[in-house]
Image (cartoon, rainbow, N blue to C red; front, side, top):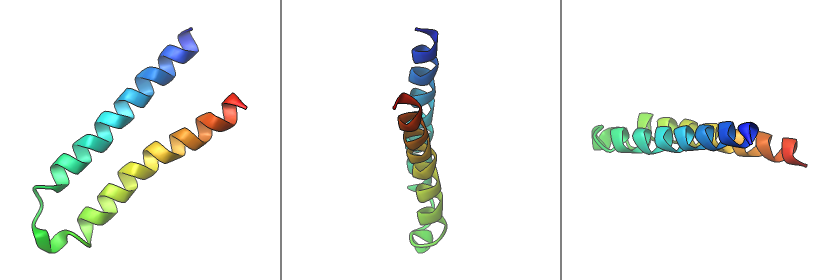
Length: 60
């Protein structure tokens, strides 16, 4: 149970992080849409996707 709770809390924190990055990048200038904004959003999603991929390997 403790193991599952840890991963549930971690998933929740990662999800909040991704949403925070998207919320903050909306405030950046439109000129940065394909530069910094795109890189920040991709890197935030990468954190989530890497976690999911690694967790799936553990569960198998």
